Length: 303
Image (cartoon, rainbow, N blue to C red; front, side, top):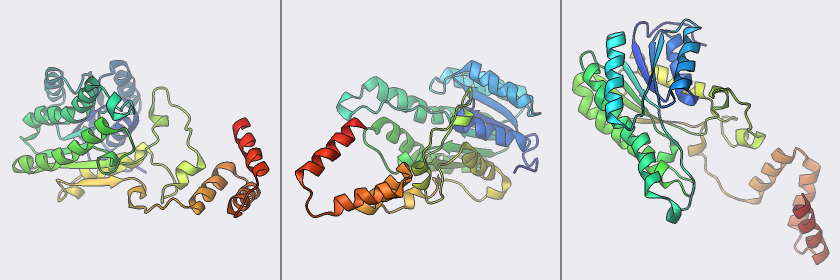
């Protein structure tokens, strides 16, 4: 529950702030007194979000800009500084996903676009915000991903971009320390952004999705917003140059693919313990005659 105005009159820029994690971060900081500036490539979505914030008493402006285009970012930072008179916090959140194609089918254009937005965008926004931030100091918070540390198949452009953010974070932290600018990265795990879309969507999570996490649920944008609010505050003034993983404990979880995991997962998905016990009994038999195998195959195919 937000109950204070610890960021009163401070100015915070959130890239990709119209939807998802970025919107939740903007809202949380706005509730705590920040004057919010949303930079987003989707101007209509940014306008909608800024107007909704104003309706709740949050001072907010928006600028349509592509974080991978230096001229647009330079103009955006100048406009925000001219409008608000300072830049205290920059949250580099803007990012795009990936096609999921196998390596040999990934195009160079896709690689470049993901790197340009997700990684180069962080560098460009930091470069042009620092021009104004170095006068009084401030905080830069970069949203990376657990994909910087572990991968699923066919995620090369995305994983490389997020890994680059983690490395760029500690480089910036050392370079900008002389200006009293702290730089921190956050690597979220699985975050369900359904409610922070435009319009908001209904979550499609399953019980298994939630129970996979040691904390018992998939993450929410508000979880990331909460850690951003802490890192942007004076309470975190001795924290810089690091990457903080916020993933409900998943990356710390040792996983062995054995029968118990399979059957426990089936029980969660099917919500039918008797059926799962029956399947387990069949599998555990040392020999299954051909007719049982055929019946199982027909049942699977017809299901």
